[in-house]
Image (cartoon, rainbow, N blue to C red; front, top):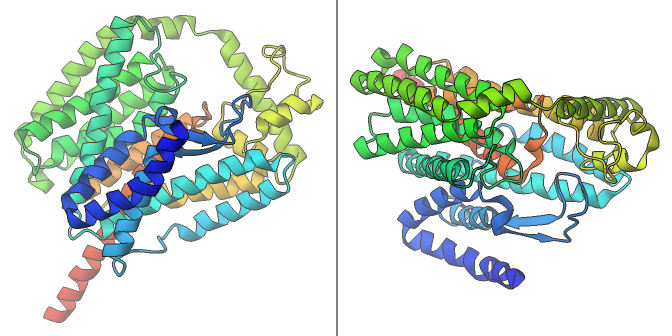
Length: 453
């Protein structure tokens, strides 16, 4: 039944959404908001072809999600209605292409290519989402309506996260809430990327009415509450740091931007009070996690990371994408030092996205991966430092969120999960699109000055 439903969604849904969006442009904005919201649903609204659920690697089949279907419809809308305005090759295209070529070579020569193809399919889908978000923004005149739709999608995620976190924490009795994910540690990585931007959006965008402002603040605080309710010590730190960064960014530029300063002062006070109340609501989890976090967890992390270092040293191209678990299970020398998780039949995954990448792609692959991340986050952050209008502040918020997420990567591998990689693709796409629009505005202003002279 599930296969039939997805087949209908692809055959009927994609062209249907495309046609309706062309005839009724307002529907396109609803689809954008819904597309963003669906990223948090993950496997609950997806189908996995050639599924290998017994495998412990992050990618376990050729997955298709509701998000993918909406992305395809929106891409067709862009191609049909605005082919001349489309940026077919974004500025990050070459480094993205280099990484993908290395990934393909890696998979072709790997021990079990099918596991690698699962991950290549995931990368391709995330790239389509990234390309789609960029062009949705840059092809829109002024970008205002599409940015409002993107804002609404992030707000919907925040409000929903607040509700489900409250339910799981106080009605279901969860010690560490997982929300809609398989593990609680996924929640901070997923939410931290848009958090700082959404806070800044609510405080600094004078175009938002009172209700929109209230929704922004509720969604942002909901994200913070959900992160704290996971019991993740890393999550506590990055969430608190993101809140402080948002308050500082807005307050330092409030006069320059002519924003309602009363709103900013009120927001700052509300955030401080809400953080204090929310902190008290989850203080039992926080204290227990800091005092009684299991030592076995840290020990297992170190054992897996050491195995990743061994793999990276052994293989110039690594052991193969999405094949760390396979190598750990089947190559004895990578398991000889394993004590804590020695009884597991299937090896797990290194809890360090950079060591995991080095293990699977070699140090060359890791270098290109880091270069790819830098090519995204640096332009967003550096352009944001111009600090002349709201878009610059949003860029700074995105840079803070993405950097916070990349810091979590030293302790987690969840970058490889579909909801998380999709959130990275979306926030990166929004940031690069804002950078592109900013450069276009400056170029037009320069031409106007020249023509006047």
